[in-house]
Image (tube, rainbow, N blue to C red; front, side, top):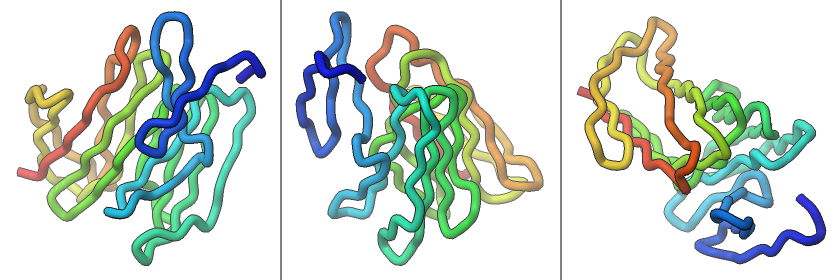
Length: 159
């Protein structure tokens, strides 16, 4: 980020205007709204940066983020990882799945932790893109096309 960047504030996220599109990053690296939705990640950083011991709704979060990777842990357990780094907005989790909006400068591989050996239906921007099953460790890996797009809504629903 340079001193010439122009920032706008929109729904608690810091939006940086570039020549061709808006890029959102979570300047605080992690924050929560009144409903307990978590937003985190800054893919514009050149150096790995982290925030530990962020409390929300009785849970403790840790985020590590920069241009190459974004990783979130909840209560010491893996929750989310993207390669390259991304910004995530409005992350919610339940026993039925997970939902969030993701943004980044290029396509990303995202790994999330869900229930072990369970089948889920995946939606990208409200379009059903198919079913996937988690491995025995509960991890589910999906690719999200972010190049030339502002954001992608990801919804993972347990079947």
